[in-house]
Image (tube, rainbow, N blue to C red):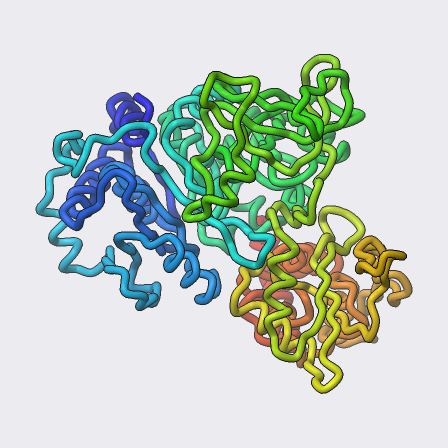
Length: 603
C-alpha cells in the first residue's frame, strides 16, 4: 500500500464513522468523505483522467477542496494546486506550462479561459451527475491504467531564479516513508486534531493533509483570516482544540503559546527556528524542527523533541527511507563537522522539474553513495553534521532566501520589475531586524528619460507575483554601489536595507483621557512604526505602504495591547484606507466599552 489512495482507504476501513474534516460548522466523517471522493473520481475517469494525468484544482479552503484532491488521486491523476488568491498572470503561467488535462473549480472562482476543459464542482447539474455514481472504492481495473507509486502525485510551482516559476513533479514513491515518519514521531490517531494552516500552493499543505487523513485524525480547516498569526490563529486553535500544528517561525514569533497544543506537537518549518522560539514553544508540548525543500516529498530531516534552551536548534536526522549528505564541491562526504552543501536522497526525491530537462539534470544528479541508478537533489543549502549525527542548517550558496517561511528566488522579483519599460536595473534584498520583521526591499534605477512612482511598480509586481513576493519597499537610486570588479555590491545594499529603519521617530504615545491625539493620528503613527516607513496618512492603504499578512497581525496585536481594541484581521484586509480602519477600530472600541463582560470573555 504505497499510493495515497490505498493508504487513505485503509484508514477509512478503520475509522469510518470518525470525523475526518472540520470546516466551520461542517463536520464530515471518513466514510462520507471517501464516498464523495469516489463518486467524483469516477466522473474524472470518465473525463479522461488517469495515471500521470495532471488536474488543476482552483478551489478555496473547504471540505470540497479535500474531496477534489482525494478524487484526483483516486482516479490515478496528479493535482496541480492553484491558489485562487494568486495573480491571474501567475495562474495562467502555471496552467500553460503544466498543460493539465482538466481544471476543477467552484463558481466563486472565475474561469481562466485558457483552452483547458473546466469542471465547476458546485454546479447543480454536475453535483447530480456525481450522486448517480457509486460511492464504493475505485478498483484498479476501473482506471484508465493501473496506478503505481511511481506515478505522478502532484506538481507544485516554486520561485524561479530566471524569473520563471518552475514546477516540481513529485510521485507517490515517498508517501509510505512520509507516513512511517509521522507515525514514529507523532503517534497521531483517532480523536486528535490537526490544523490545516499552509496554503494549498505549498507542500506543507500536503503534510497537514496526510498527518490527519492517513492516520485517522481530524483535519481542522478554517477561513484564511482565522489563520492569521497572532490572536486570530490562537483563537482558532483554542476553539477547535487543535493537538498538532505546523507553523513557520514568523507565525510562532507573534502568536502567544500559552495554553495551545497542550500535550500535543508543534513543528517549526520553513525557516530557522531560533533559540528563544525553541525555549518558548517546547514548554507544555513537543516541539520538532523540520527541514526540506519542495524537491523532496515535503521534507528531508526532522529534529526533536526539542527540550528547553539549546545553543543551536538542530534540523535532526533524515526521514525514514531518506538520506541527507553533507558534501564538498567534489562530492566528498564531510563527516568531520565541516560545512558543506546538503544533498538529499532516498525515496522522497522528486522526479524533477516539469518540462525542464536541463534544469532537472543540473539539480538532480547521480547519487554516488546510494544504489545503482539512484539520484540525489542538490539543495543549494549549506549545513554540517554534528558528532552525534544531527544535522544543522547554516545558510545558502546562492541568491535564494526564506522570508516569512516562503522560499523566494530574488531573481524572479528582479526579473519582473526589470520587465517594466521604465526600469533599467533592479536589485532585490531582504531587510528587517529579525525573522518577524523580514521583508523584501527592491532597489531600482529607472531610465534617464522616464520616472515611475513606487506605487505603480508595486502594482506592476503584484499583477504577476504572489503577495509574499511583492516588495514591501521600493527604493529609487541614481547609482548602485559596486565592487572593485565593477559588479553590483549586493552586500552593501542588504546592509543598507537592514539599517534603513534607523532614525525613524519613536513609537507614538497612546492618547490620554482628554484625547490629545485623534484615534486616526495614533493609528497612522502606529502603522508608520510597524512598517518602518517615513510617513503614513489616513488616505494611505496599509498594503500599498508595504504591509503584508504578518505586519497586519503585528498591527492587530499592537492595537489590542496598546489601545485596548480587538479588530478582526478581516477588517485590516478589507479597509481601503487607514482612515477607514481607524473608524472601524473606534466603533469596535465603543462596542467593547458598552459590553465589557463579553469583551473580557473574548480576550
